[in-house]
Image 1 (cartoon, rainbow, N blue to C red):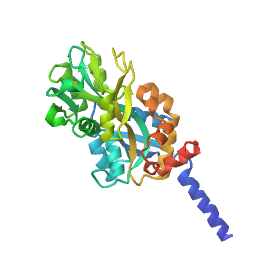
Image 2: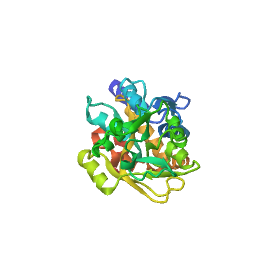
Image 3: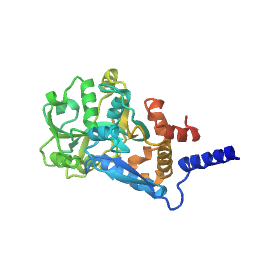
Image 4: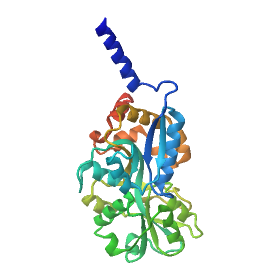
Length: 318
């Protein structure tokens, strides 16, 4: 009888760990690192938290403004954030141990793809990256993962951000567009659909023109940095943009601290999947935040959180 009771108790405890929260229980608080105000990550992070909280009462995701990818990674390593938004190139470096010790952080979900491009005002005659050499270009905040991606792209083209351009950094992502709109800078580097900086420039009086890579440049970059993938900014992504823009880029990810409980990760990815339509209504780029893209976009299955792997397996995606 004693052994039977022990087995029964163990089953109950296991159910309490992996099942739905008990009625009246306090929701599990999850701290989400985003970016500086005015950046794409800040916008996405707020929408993501609201969407998860709306469908999963057992979780309380709380966005926290940070300096972006460059701060999110160490905060995750220290356990001061539970999950955080990380630009794809920086995520790959951390998880693969490129230029640094290999991190034990894990992938929660793919966010959206980030095709890297430059935006200039519509009345500026620059048509190619070569036309931007020696000119003032805003690359964003120094802690941003977009700066890391820009370094790789330019290096693949045998260019250097600080040598070949009059490089400008800002303290907040929201400070970048006014530099271009006001004429202090010729171009702004950024990535993806719905990126706030590009929205502001494209809606300015002169509109915007977007500069990507030629097919030859795409091949040149990937010959040196193969983890960057051929991508395009679809036509109509921004006001007045009538043609698709070819370039390279990477998948952005939501990463977790190494010891995030499996049950919490499972409930998070399930909530993100369930909230997909509502999240996409808030942000067009969130249409790419899917279990399918998480399974396919992860550089290595071992980089995915075990709780997420369980969910993806149950969905028949692995």
